[in-house]
Length: 316
Image 1: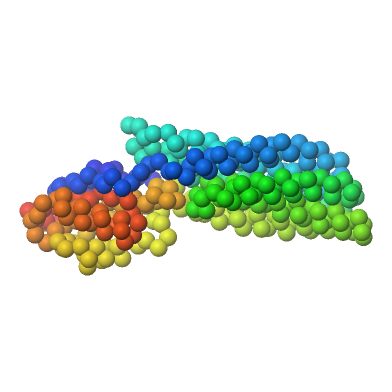
Image 2: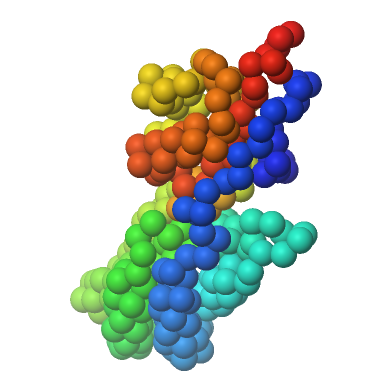
């Protein structure tokens, strides 16, 4: 679905005054640099420990450790994707992409959400197979590697958790690391129980519980990012309610038609609307009042407004 252009949203009507959109909207995001830095730090830590956990999972025979190692492998790729999303989003707009590259971060979050879902499905399937045919696990080795992994994941989680909570790209990366953190905890618990009781099924059981938690997060992030990519309206914003609100609180509006609201990113909301005034008046003052009300009341900083003169309303 292509976004409405910034020139006009009226179709099938005589065109009126086209108010230029205000300067309150910014295609850049000051939090992107911080998010990119945090993701880079987490990537270095995860990638450094990933190989150790893969080898340890194979040698120990633990699904919990293999699941945690799989988390780390996907984490490294997901963090690299998140970093790339930030890097591309920082590029300026051009003639082919007039809104810039801000949505690349949302696309990265969507991809990471799908990766979380796929990874969880694999762990659940492997866990069921392990329950049907339990395999011996080396408890002491599992415990040692899981403890080291827990420390690495705690540091990564702290780094990412300190960033912008509304950033879907950062949240996608954070949930990858959170799943890894939970996997390390599950591996430690499984190791202690195996050392004490030799009950091997605890390893796949705990792995499957972690996979379910990660699956829920993956579905949530994918849905939110998908809603933005489909140009859905932000939560809490309703076109009819905003139109009625404007007519009640902004003088000079007779009616509002052809309103479209969508999310450019998780932070930037865009609106286009066609305004029929109550009387002939200069376009700029009315558009300025509308734009100010949208920004102050509904936090919409990017508005394109077409003002139709009274002479152009006949036959509408």
